[in-house]
Length: 240
Image 1 (cartoon, rainbow, N blue to C red):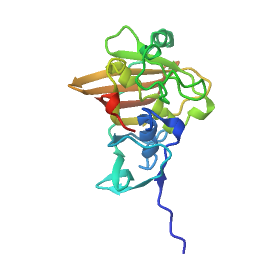
Image 2: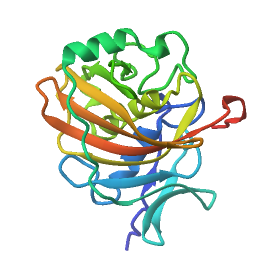
Image 3: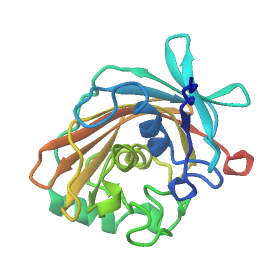
């Protein structure tokens, strides 16, 4: 009799966030697929990032205390469970989003310039190049996004709605990493079509920032939404 192989989660090197570690949104979306939800139309999932997810390392996936967990050396790196549906942000006009992206702070200074989601040092077709800039509304940013054919998976959709929350919270002034993300993907984006990503601050508590993000088509149809918690860090002390 063949023994079933235990599932694992591996973060390919191109899907990085901070140097040496996985993009938080991509990693969260990848573990969400093991919850029996997380894909398009399959319900909201809450994911907590306990440690920087390593790149190119197979992490065993199992169950622990009601959570689906990805572990490394017996320690939990990511944990996920069904969550509450996030409240979507209001739509932003694509023209406003284009103007916002032109004023993206990350084009001048970026704590993690090679980030898969928002890094300006990633080439077109390599990274997502979601550049959330100011909309004129306090603590609200937006960006247009036209996904390439390889960037329309559930994991990439989670990544697309990842960093806008941090830019709304001011990551350009103080480096942050994702602590938790609850997201629901209603439908996957269409390759080659323009979409709009919006991010906003819900509240702040010291070094902790509660944010929300939303992905819509250019016509305003809701595709995905998330609620997040970001933590300020010292990049010099961050080890992926």
